Length: 412
Image (cartoon, helix red, strand yellow):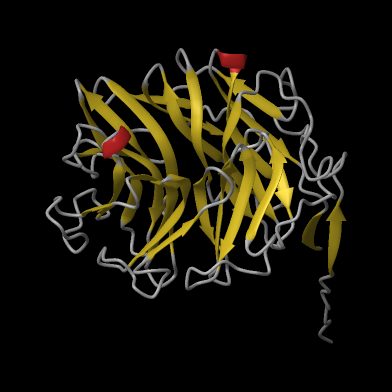
């Protein structure tokens, strides 16, 4: 007689409640360090983080500069430096005389791209560097892993933001020129680092678009819509300083269906600017920055009009003395912002989330904290922040916070 064995698999959901409340430090992150929940690392001399990104395996990669050169670090999921990356977990890359890394993105193949600026004498270039997964330079990209782009004006160009298209092309946004001559620069590169000749018109070179809003303007944020259109955000001067957004078609021309001829400007208070932009799953655009020294968020509909369901007529101004420099979205629609305070969380409607920290603000004093420049949400809901530490002496400072209950699907 044949015996039939019936194997039964039971699946259930469990809610993992971490010690502490949402907005408190995750003490399992670098648990043996001087302040569990944080990791402060001197890469080389004065060091500061300017952007962060999460790998598919959960490791955290941060980028910025150390002693005036591009610098990166990678952390294991437990908050310790990843010794398999670079030299003991850190990388320093010399391009020219002064090299500042400002933004980072990780490709689907795991390669890491950092954008910023590189100076040689009085000329400053947009700089792009790509790294292999072990932190070595990617020799298949540009010249030995490095690409320099000269905007051709006022001897000063810099990228402050980077985004990756679904086709592998790389878009950076920033500034060309300084002071009263500053304008917006957007550059698109092919996956091998060469200039994309299908992007840009106006005589600035292949792959380059230079735009101006008001008397001066520069871009600090960039995002790619699912249809390939490019959205940038930053600061412009039209009498006073204000927020601007521009949406470009895939060829670099202004998208006339957005705002007025592709441009939106928003004045909030006596002065305002946008430092980051993200695209929500519903296509709405969310920016953060500051208004006269107060935390600013604004949300726009897909046509560039302000979203009246957010804040007050599309604008949320909270927290005196706080600057928003980076933002990320949780899967439940809540918004996390880092900047002058390590971390702030708001509801999807733009109001502060009272279930997070104290009144929406993570209030744990962070040893050596100067300012935050990057934020990301892990798949388990925990929130990582990249900052400058060292109380002014300059260190790479990373922190991880509890986001609340973590819901996990468990099968046995």
